[in-house]
Amino acid sequence: MGLVESFYAKIEPIVLMKIDVPIEKPGKVPSGTTEFPFEFTLKPIKGMVLHETYHGVYATTTYVVAAECTRKGLMSSSLVQSIEFVVEVPTGAGEFDAEPADFNITPAALDNVQQKKAIEAFPPFSISGQLHRTNCSITAPLTGEIVIDESEAVISSIELQLVRVETVAHGGTEAREATEIQNVQIAEGDVARKLIIPIYSVFPRLFTCPTMLTKTFKVEFECNLIIIFADGYMITENFPLLLYR
Image (cartoon, rainbow, N blue to C red; front, side, top):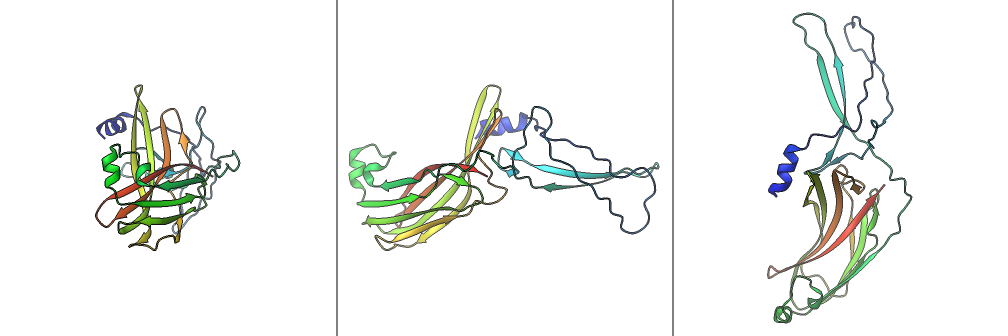
C-alpha cells in the first residue's frame, strides 16, 4: 500500500487537452443575465490521446471547463467558475468476441488450499455456472448464471464483486493495487440446489471505463464471484474482464 501512495504524491498530473476560447471582447456587461454561447472541439495536445472520464483511487481522468471573467479596477478580482464534463471515447476496435467463462468449483479445484487433508476437511460441494462474456461492452450489463449443484454446508450469501486494478509506473517501478467498485448480492440464504440463479450487474458510470493500458498507468477490471457459507468460510472465483465502448 505504501508504495502506491508514495508514487501518487510524486507524479505530476498529465495534461491531455488544453484549449483557450475567447468568447467576448472587452467591454461592459449590462445588468441582468447575459449569455455567451461557446463551443470547442475535443482535441488532445500533441503526443497525447484522450482517455475516457474515470474516477479511480490512484488513477483519475477528468475534464474541466473553466470560465473566467477579468474585471478592471484595483479592488476588482477575476470571477472564475469551473465544472466537470464527461467524455466518452469509443474504443474503435469493433465489438470483441464474447469469450464466455465456464466455471466448476469443488474442494479439489480450490487454488489456495494445497494440503490434501485440508481439502478433505471441506464439506462436499459443487458449484457450476458461466459468465456470458469476459469481453464486455461498458454500456451493457455483466450477465451469467450460477447453480449450486450440491453443498452439505449451509450457504449464507452469493455475491458478485466488481474490482478495479490500478497500476502506476514511476521511476522504473510499477505499483499495483486492486480496490472494490461495487458488490452486488445475487442470492441470500441457503438457496435451492440445482436452481439456475441469474447473474446481472450494471457497470457504474464514472467508476468504470474501457480498459486503459498506457506507459504511465493502467486501469484494468476483474470480478469476483463470492460464496459465503453460514460457518464463515468463503470461496472466491476470479474472472479478469476486458471493458470496451
